[in-house]
Structure formats: C-alpha cells, structure tokens
Length: 212
Ligand SMILES: *[C@@H]1O[C@H](CO)[C@@H](O)[C@H](O)[C@H]1NC(C)=O
Image 1: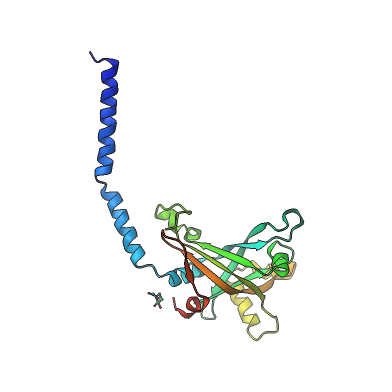
Image 2: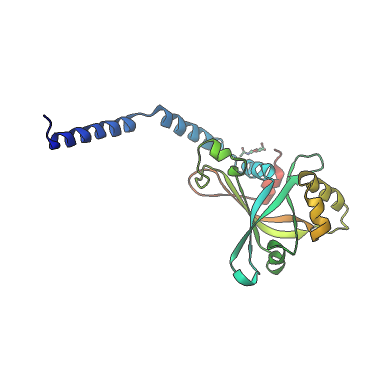
C-alpha cells in the first residue's frame, strides 16, 4: 500500500522528469532558434521598410487630436495607402487621401505631424509563422513626417490620383461625395523593428534609393 507521502513523492518525481526532458532537448525549439538567428543575419532594414509599405493597403496613422472631446491626445485612424508608380512598382512614396470631415484631416492642418505604422501582421505573416504581433520579430515600420496636399494643378496629379483609385476603387466615390484630397507623406524619420535589440533608423534617402 502507498501512503499519501509516497504518492506525493511519485508525482514530484514524474513532474521533475518531464521538466528535465523539455529542458534537455527540443529539436523543434533548436530549429526555431537557428532559423531566427539566420533570419537576423540577413535582415535588410531598408528593404523591410519598403516591402511592408508596398504590401500594405492601409496604415494606422497617428496625429495630435484637435477633436473637442480628446483635444491634445494622440489620435489614431485607418488610412488607405498606395506606393505604386506608373508602372505598378513600389516607389516608396506613401500616397493617401484625406478629408476634413474625418479626424486626420483637421489634425494635420493644425499641427502637421503624423506617424504611419506598418506591421508584417497586416498580411498575417506573423500569425502564420507563430509570432505574436508585439514580438520584435514580427517586423514593424514606423514612419513619421508631414502631410503634403498634392496640388490639383500639378502635372502628375491626375495620373497619381488614378493610380490610387486603381488600388482603392471606393476612393472614386469618396472624392465625389466627401471632398477627399490626394496627399503624400514628406518622410522625416523611419524606425524599423525587426528583431530583439531595439529599432533601426533608416534615412528617407536610403529608403527611396533602393529598388525592390
Ligand atoms: C538591401 O536590399 C536592397 C534591395 O535589394 C539592396 O539594394 C541593398 O544593397 C541591400 N542593403 C544591404 C545592406 O544589404
């Protein structure tokens, strides 16, 4: 017959043995660490910034609120974006449409400071590779700058607007009904988070210079 004490000893022994086993060796965990290490060696922060921007149909955009209820708070919004050039390739130029009937429109005109956030999770790449969206290995690109309203009489205005509508067909209606206007981001700073150890700063000129 086992005494109660014996059963406890047995349970503890089994518990220790299983903990010991997982700590001793996990082929899966090793493979994951090696894959992550290899990935880190090959990280090209500038390229990651351009790729995330190009793949995204939208960005989360922060501005300094002018709304009566939350005046001075950071405000966020979802803004549809596109960086295609005439040939349908990535230009890196972030184009978007704003209206003064929404949050971001009045905010930038009061204090022209906005920040665009892109994450690899927008295309579910992190979920599909078992990464939490907040882990640094789930790549993130944070781009701050000033809004530039594209003048309607600029030579390329019509073409640029047509390219945007090509990716966001609903925009054709926004322009008619809610007085949306085409904008570009004048990039001041780019932070890229793609691994442990803090963000990398990428200059706007390096960002625009590469071909992806
Ligand atoms: C990053 O990638 C771009 C585009 O492929 C390439 O032009 C550039 O040289 C790469 N930079 C580094 C540091 O590898």
